[in-house]
Image (cartoon, rainbow, N blue to C red; front, top):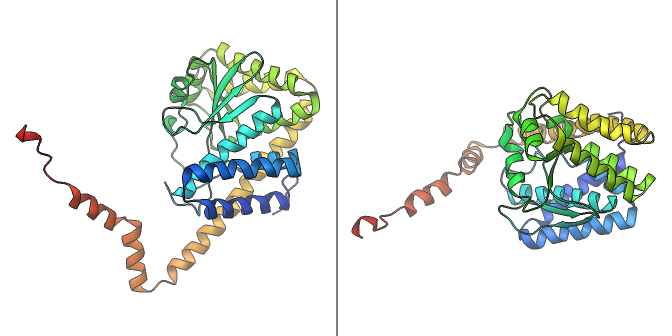
Length: 304
């Protein structure tokens, strides 16, 4: 795999974090704080390139993490921590919220405006995504008095032609942005200063707010990209490099997923008949379903 922007060190760092999330997964509240603390310390120790590497690669949930597992939930929190660190690097006062329901995951305050944000990540094997996966309407409800909200997604997992999410975004002042855009913002803040980066973010939010709501993806992204590229000539070079990194991130995530799935297929092929039966029973959650069925009893409602 030949890469121009993403380095072997970046890939190794991702592998480290997959292992770390597997190791930590147990107590969600404590583990979330550990992840936030460790990433903060890593960025302080190694600098902004470490944060950029996280932004480039964090959009893919590792296939090795089971659906709805403690690892998957902690990985989701990891992506929230990554965008929180990005907003902090840009010059916002940012906070990862601890609440688990009916709130956004990150809250940001700048000199002239505030917003809430949420990070999205998807498995490479997840194909049928719909508007509910992006939670645009939910983010509007979770503003709690703030004028704007933001959803950050991997570019390659967003609808490329038409989708209601773009219409909803414009109608509800919810900015859909990619990790690629956020990496450019972080680099621009380092290059031109926090105040200019924060001001540019405000311009992007206002551009979304002023859009004529449409389902057409190209209309939405042309508006966002033009605001970004027209604001400062220096952004063009950063944008070009991050676009290359975005394409390379697909290669990295694809290779990681295929390697795991091939290993898993080989493991299954080597199972004995008894082991295979146990595997299927566990996969189908038969025992859990039996316990759930056995727990159902008369609730006495008809005796009232």
